[in-house]
Image (cartoon, rainbow, N blue to C red; front, side, top):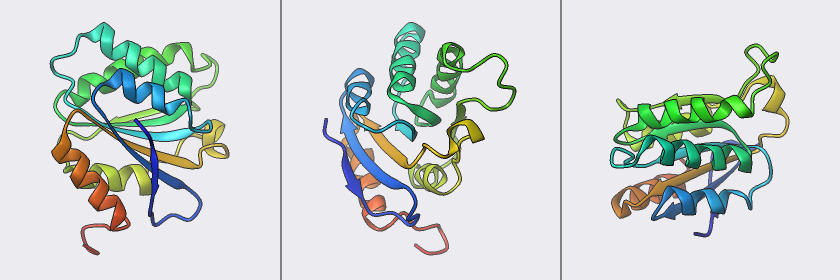
Length: 161
């Protein structure tokens, strides 16, 4: 999978988009990004085992994800797996200065993308080095088309669309 840069509304952060067939493939593409980045994963994770999800989460965190947004069927469970995986990355003495995770099961894909671009700002530990938002869709051509089209439009809010 190749990540491509797409238009966005925030000049201080670049937005990358990619579509992958698996979470493992998506994780491999993230290592090409500079550390750190906001990651939105749009995936149906319901058929995957907990250990598979924790492994995929760990790979994303190793690549440099500093804020992770999960969307799609099973996104709350994927979020929980990121929280489990991040224990090896967060400093136990950091207090609230940790890798952030959210899930967006009651939002449209476009709303989740808008959140990742406009609202998902990491804690101070990662704030200065997080200059990228990576939007990845997994194994769903329809979601990929929707996400890419929305990003090419500049990811407008509902009022602007």
